[in-house]
Image (cartoon, rainbow, N blue to C red; front, side, top):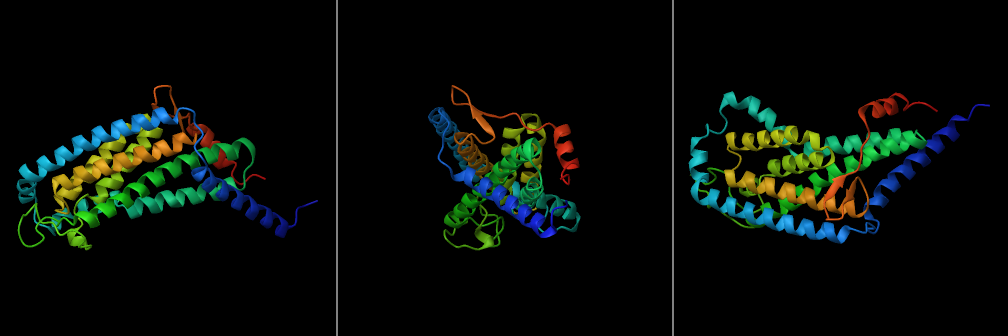
Amino acid sequence: MSVPADSARASYAAQLLAVSWRALEQLVRSPSHSRRAEAARKLARHSLWLSAAGAALVIVLMVAFDQTEIQLMPARGTPGLWPIRILTDFGKDEYLLIVLGAALMAVAFVAAGLHGTRRALLLGLGTRLQYMFLSVAVSAFVGEILKYLIGRGRPFVGGKANPFNFVPFEGTGAHASLPSGHAVAAFALAFAVSALWPRLRVFMFTYAIVILLTRLVLLAHHPSDVVAGALVGMVGAMAVRYWFAARRLGFAIRADGTIVPLPGAAPGRLKRVAHGASAP
């Protein structure tokens, strides 16, 4: 006997709701990993050293290099820079979040129609997508707060190359230069993907550096802005990684506090899941 269509639709909707609720619930549950204290200490130590070194570099660039560098760049609006203007959008936080959010929704819709191992395998991918999404989102949120608080003018705002043009709490795009939002998003994504799949590290950080360079060529930022953005993105992704590892999501914690990725889905297995997505 065939299952009535209304009943099948109701069952699928219930499964979709269950999958979505589970995905949200796992993010806010209490941390349970026995080694989370060691991981927290390691995170604090690495974040402190990275922040100190990054802040020192930002100050040096601001004092000694920012003005020289932006004067060497082509004029803003140069017609021949149109490929760079297209390329730079691959680091825009809104676009990255839309793509990652759409991928999360697709995983939920497909997983709701699967059962057993196939669902578990796909939901494992969904957890990793959650980590990438939140790494970019949290880092971008912190970056926007810093932009508002610092209020640094973009290159040549005010008519001259002045790297010390600060109007705190100004709140407009003209004074939202530090940190670079594109650098924040690109480096957060690069760190997140590399943390999950270390073999992609070179590719992902090459991508992030290319995005960083486009912001300089387009005179959207000073060198110190993009370095600060890279710092915010990586520290943000590190903090989100700890949040996931403490809840045993996508990562494990070694005895010394090192966070390592859990084994992920092999491409062949994911192909079989996709192929069987419409199976009963």
